Image 1 (spheres, helix red, strand yellow):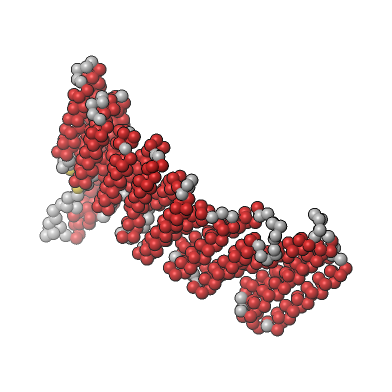
Image 2 (cartoon, one colour):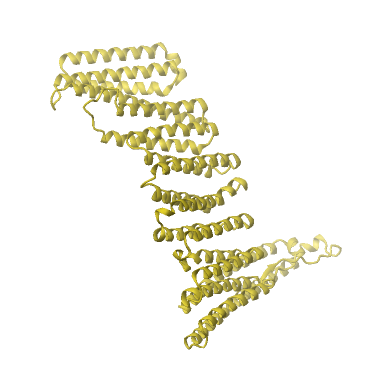
Length: 613
């Protein structure tokens, strides 16, 4: 077991050092390119000394220049240009040798560590050193390695990070061994020991401005409850400890701008919490569990939101990952805990979280309007929670009804705040409402007391149409981000509203005649009456759209009326073969009169028509 832990430490050290070497090679490459560019500009090369590696870092030192003896003519002589090339070559050779030396140094240090580990294992196997001595040696070595790294920091920065990171890992392993391998201490003292190691690592990282040490410290900190066992620590100790770690990460992020730390907090928190949830959760712990989940949700969300709003920084991939993962995990945990017996509180909580996101979205849009993506993403989160609350609390047609109301509210909010995000979310919610309505209509069973025009399907269809009309009005009254978006939005929702209205009226006419039939087969006369009435309804509706288009100078209703006239004419021709003689006469005459009336309007108001077009 001890050998396995040592191998893990070695692998981690190799990974960290490979990253540092890659970074150094990249700097050398950039340095070489810069030197080659300087060699092509004689003036620059004549006043700047060669770059030389010093103390494990690269520094630039300006060379002295005698302005009294160097004339402009001499500065541009070929001699100076030729002298710059050997200097660059020498720098490249020296830097390459330095990298090779460092690689050999890492290999040597790693070999020494492995050799010492095997020696200690040999001593342990032969009982030369007891359990307490083994732990003591580990603590001593870890402390000495950290002290050595801190001592060498001024001259050997990279070696210092390597040593101190390894020292922290040795301390973690030693404390863990004292509990898990040798049972020298109880769980709580071992846990406190790991907290001390974490605090030391965080303090060293802040003092030395070393992000790597901070990573190692917090990774060890989040591993501590898992290594000790969350069942051993208890609910309140585990929750309080994770909250303190995440608060520390939040503070360091704003103090040092080490944004990647939040990923450790995110995944570490949910791994520990998931382990505890499926092993130790009982209904008695519901309240503290919800408190803990909300606190972590607030901390992790604030880690990105405050930067975006206060620092006015464009959101990065890390911000989107953290915001999305935090919101989803929070929603899933709340659903898991509350849906069975407390779904009313669950839906209310989702509405409250949605309201918080709406406020955050409005503030972010005001303080950081340049970041268009985040100003769409945040309204999306708000709408997601609000939309999810509806099916949790309601069922049947009520889901569609509330989503239609939500769509109107989002459009009003978009018009007041000029936020494209809320406008897009309004479209999404309206589409969800229509999908839910279609599902409801497909499963609706007509009751015996069904009344035409006074039934749930017709009322829901009219509500969908009215919602589309209201959204059209919002577009017309308050505009949009551009005139093109405004015109397109008005046209789309006018078409949708009229299609839904016509479908609702047509369905009620057909159902009315279906209710008149006797038995399961519709009588021919009733079917003829139904087809004729539908044709007259369509023709009248087409005429109404045409009149509105002329009077209000709206192009979309006028075109819809013309298209509907053509469709109605085709329907009448098709119905002729199934209609009786009397119904044929009525259908053709009424449709012809309505069509002629519309044609007269076209002729009479052709000048206005030109203006519309």
